[in-house]
Length: 42
Image: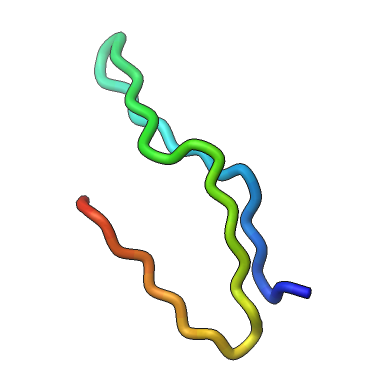
């Protein structure tokens, strides 16, 4: 069983009428005691 669980995560940005979806349905689990780093462009 996961200590932290994320399901179907979606992130969108809107600039005027343009919507940019940067994440679409991300799923992941973090077990107790794991060290996790999320990297990417800002």
